[in-house]
Image (cartoon, rainbow, N blue to C red; front, top):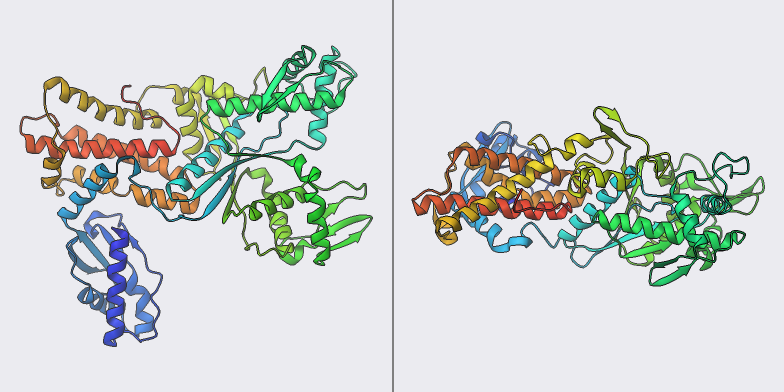
Length: 562
């Protein structure tokens, strides 16, 4: 409907140019069609006249009236009026609302999907945790945000590639190997010989036991078999990384998260991509040497200071492989490259983008896109929960899913804007009460499934076509709120995909469930009069469909029984 109204207003603007009311060279402004917060102001409103007043050298209300007079006749529009300083308000015909409800039911699981990104490729990278231990709750927030972004982009027509970047090289992996080796030799964290930066969680005991027992790990179609030799540090490193990668993959699968590409940082070195990137940056004249180190002149691309690329000892700083990695994304055809990270990575964004610009590879400014999430605080009984015996120093994602369930964990971790800090209340997430938002939405879906069961038990038929033929009681506030809420769903999917904000969808679903609950409380469904029954069941069926579609984009189940 927004697109239809936008076209009508554009045609009216063309008509005003032809009539001389607007200058012939006046550009069509970037006007919006939006839903007023106050239903008394109509179903939709546009600011087009306010933007056209200056080029027309007229007051906005006069231009608004001229636009109204020039609007093509359209059966979907019941009334148009000029309001306030020059807004144009539209009231949609009741027949149009009925037709759109029919589209909800006709399109079913495809309702809300669009082709905005058709023919374009988007790479979404998320989690990308070092394979040095179990995933923690922060990784869980990254996982669900990234997964939902991927699902929503897919619903917007994009070809989506889900990607996991393994930092399987560097000092942290060395510390992991040393920690497992120490455990394999019978040492504990309190022993004076324990590695200074060793990992202390009980999971290290499990890895060491598996290594000494010559366990085999299936990963990426290959088998990594433990050597069992506590003196072979390279063999320990390979086995420990494989063991923990497998554990992380299993936890993510149980959480409903998967990936299409697992990219190893080590491959950037073995394939020569890091060296190639450095050579290109140097050849392009963007590097210089100082103090025995190689520097990248990132200040020329908006960074606050130049950055060291290669230290005096010959090793590379961490942002250099990041530049090489993102270059590979560009070369793989990602029109949009989205990276979901913790907010503590904020300082690296400018230097990675600067490095990409310095490659002179045609990469647009502002590419890639970053979505940063803030920390999560978990509470139980009003007290913060910090530790896991298994991990030793933090609460794991597995702990949280086991306590709160997958649906509640996903909902609670995605329901707030990523850049806002989040408090996860385990007691609320576990509760089967209407104070629990995910439970509230799922109950609304199950309630409509219950209506269908009651229909069958009573031998009543539901005639969808008859229900869609009945007039909608738009004067009834609860009905109007539910209908307009239902038909807002495609806009929410489009906006959430554009802004990379899946929390918008969670907010919408809760509001829709609340609107349905209000309607449900005010109206009986299984009445004897078939016309009334069918009309109300149409609204119930459409609501069920939209809730199921939206929950699917969040990776949350839509149960038929609660």
